[in-house]
Image 1 (cartoon, helix red, strand yellow):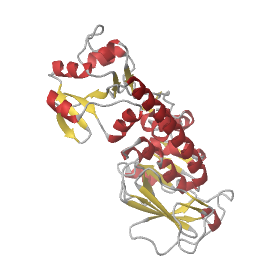
Image 2 (cartoon, rainbow, N blue to C red; image 1 turned 135 degrees about the horizontal axis):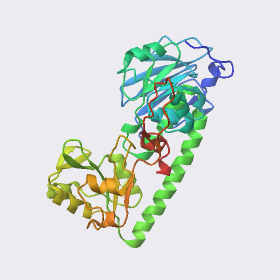
Image 3 (spheres, rainbow, N blue to C red; image 1 turned 135 degrees about the vertical axis):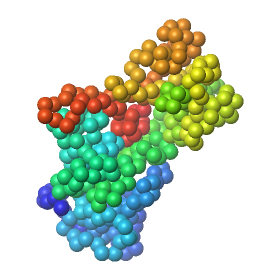
Image 4 (cartoon, rainbow, N blue to C red; image 1 turned 45 degrees about the vertical axis):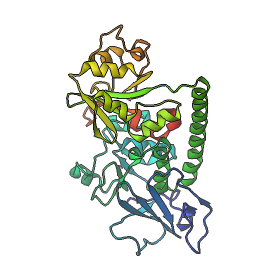
Length: 366
């Protein structure tokens, strides 16, 4: 295992931060999971047990300077903490590490990273492999990093599954800041920042809902994209519904979409064949605001209105769709990354979007 510098290896006492109290032990601070974030942390005298219920994985984290525990759940992965060097194929994990003050521990990143300082790592060729799919590349880095943060569960003994983007609400996604923090003994920093995030989000929610109540109207918001199966799609996962309702708006009810002829592909999306342009246009007419999730390889999302109108079978002007004609069409691309291809580098100037990066960790900014 990589050598832990003296400044981060402070012995068993450093684990004195807790989300749950263990009988007979006293902790200086406890971190609370408050938004059904789907993970749990249990603290013991010199180690922690982290359970990721979304990925069905368990991690045992023991403080450097202490002996590894011997009595822990079967199948759990064992790590010495604080981690000093990680590979973050999942862009949200890299951003969470930055938010809780552990950016200096991120050694390898996704080629789709948006954070400017971490793009420098990508340009220099420090590309994080996905241990589930690129096992040889992960094996090559096995001795250079303490852990691989990645989305998918993996049989790699150093992989840690990051499940923030699977959560059902903006705050539960942001609370995975605490999940990342426990691997670096950064609970205090994470708890303090999350309180700030939650307060700011709650204040915005109250203000937005008060405004809707004052005008006695909830604007209709559609999240849409042109599908890959010759269809148009209305996207309705729970966290997007929460964003809309918390902002004082509403989505079209499922019954309305069904009446228009849409088919429920999954619990989170409804689609209609692209040949039904008349129905699609009539659906778009119902929206006060349209959020496009259309993806284009060159830019990670549509950045010009003409791209949107062309893709959705609309004329370039006077479309007859009020939201489009008013310019009330927004892209989730937000910040998109695109840097130069460095000589002799694996990095090829890939383009990524901040939607699954900072937008996940800082929901109050969305």
